[in-house]
Length: 309
Picture 1 (cartoon, one colour):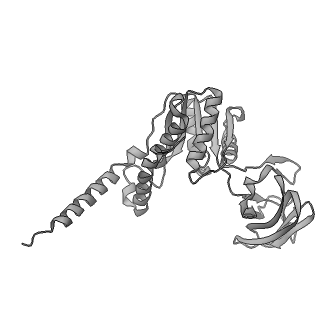
Picture 2 (cartoon, one colour; picture 1 turned 180 degrees about the vertical axis):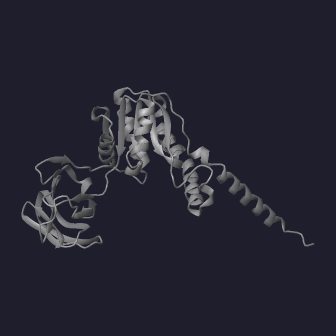
Picture 3 (cartoon, rainbow, N blue to C red; picture 1 turned 45 degrees about the vertical axis):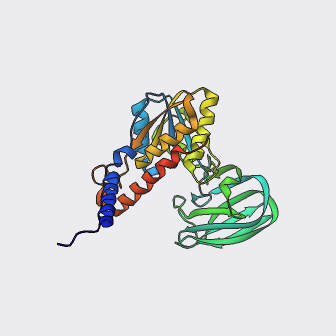
């Protein structure tokens, strides 16, 4: 019988050890370890579909104060006939405007600036980008849907996927965003994931007075680190010594490490984990994408220890 070369046996052993390590890492990553705090920090990037689970954890923990972190989100809104999104900019802008939008049959989009119409175009059922020039400086932009007929006011006619000015997300340039509805009411826009999550939690029944939004400027490549630094500033200013971060699935370990690193020794950070239905405990390994996600998350853990406040 031919003997297996030693190097092959070593490589096979290393591979087997790696597989076992990854297979056993799920509970290490999807950690749930509350600290007993009365302050919760919700990561605003958690998708709206999981807001009921977030609310359940908030109710379970009886948190008095809820902070929601979040970097700027795409300038994305759904509008009905007669609605208008009004954006006041931090500074008057000029240059190239790019917007991606789609919508119902016979619907269109009009964008107005201080000097008049910047763009007027029809939309299709597929979102695609179109460019327009802001020829004169403008401090306010208005986005309004149009229709060739007289559509039902309840119909959602237009979906704006994103808008950029000179390549920059419009939400990163705004001073305020409001939605003027056809019935005369006004709603606050959601320029950050913190704003979007806050509105969703309020709609789910969390009292608005318990919620504090912490919109975050995205610096570097890690939104978790940017959000953690923003909360650390707030914790120091408010004298918060204990807080639980509500995170998602196998990202929980990195969230706890990152927030703990940002807060330092002055604030004890606990973690509450929302279950990811795509990566269920005891079953995630049956899917190739499950292995990819777990390996990727596991590889990112060491970097969380190296973050420099």
